[in-house]
Structure formats: C-alpha cells, structure tokens
Figure 1 (spheres, helix red, strand yellow):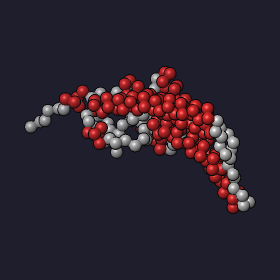
Figure 2 (spheres, one colour):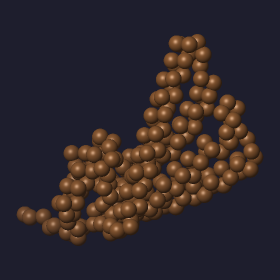
Figure 3 (cartoon, rainbow, N blue to C red):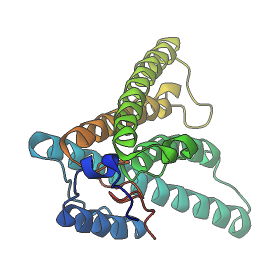
Figure 4 (cartoon, rainbow, N blue to C red):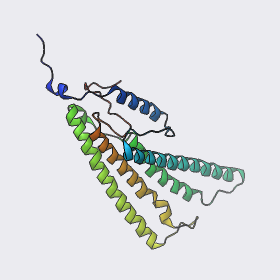
Length: 221
C-alpha cells in the first residue's frame, strides 16, 4: 500500500543548489571569523549596504580587541616591571568593552549567532517557518532601531550634563556613542534579513546564514 504524498511538501520551493553551496561557503568562512573577503548575497544597493556594515563591524571589533590587548599588556608591564600602573587603563578598557559589545551584537546578527529559542519554530512546516522568520526579523529590526533612538537620546542627555571621565578627562558620552551605533547596525542587519527572506525561496537566519534545515524538513548534519 503506497502512502499519499504530503501536500505541504509538494508546495515547498526547491532551493537552488548554487544558493546552498554559496551559503555553505559563507558558513565555512564564518567558522574562521574572517570578514575580509565577505561578499553579500543581496542584490543591488542592499548588497552594498550589507557589505558596508560588514566592513564597519570588522574594523570596530578588530580595533577594539587589539587596543584592549595592547592596553592590558602595557598596564601589566608597567605594574610588574616598573611598579606603576597606567592610571587611565581601567577607563580605556571600559570604553573598549562598550565598543566591542555593541559592535558584536551586529556581527552576531549578520552571522545568525544570537541565541534562539526555536522549539516551536522547528516544529512548524516549511512555509510557516519562512513566514515566522520574516516576522521575527522584521519585529527585531523595529525593536533594535527603537533602542538605537532611545540610546541616542540618552547619549545626548549625557552630553548636555557635561560630565567627564576622572582619569582621561574626556566627556563621558564619548564612550557611549557605540550603543546607538551598535543598535542601529543591528536593526539594519535584521531588516536586510527580513528582505532576504522575501526575495529568496530559502529560509535565512541572516543575510549569510541559511536555516539548519533543507527543503525536505530534515536537519542538516
């Protein structure tokens, strides 16, 4: 006795093998955390925006990590080699932590590496998962852009108060500007992900990361 074909599976679009191959190549690049050769899969101006965001993230993260390592190393050498720590080291590291954190949330969004609670999502059929991913990306983009606005307003409030850092003697708001920038870049990234899920037949966690299931609803190994 032969079983009747699943109507839902027949309606699912067949994902272009070239798309899957490109996504797997990007995924391998993600594992190496190397964005120097990043190429967006979005068309036209959207691809340009995505690539520019990738470059900004790479510069901010690389600069932040390198400066933090240099600052920490110099402070240790000064403390144990010359008996005197760098008086501004703690404030510099605080500023760099803020930079790395908010640049990192945009980076994680572009690589689809934010924590997801996907028990209900994974149980849905293909079309429902695709629609849910579009809604999730669009709503998250709105939330991130709203947080960017409130963070910008907070930075402007701090600037008006005129407070300065005790050691560096620079305005306190200078180290806070990364918060609205990070939220804004993350919002753009989720917005691009929503668009990608509209124009592409596959399900995308981000502009460069496919969902971990193929069109037959079987989990990829």
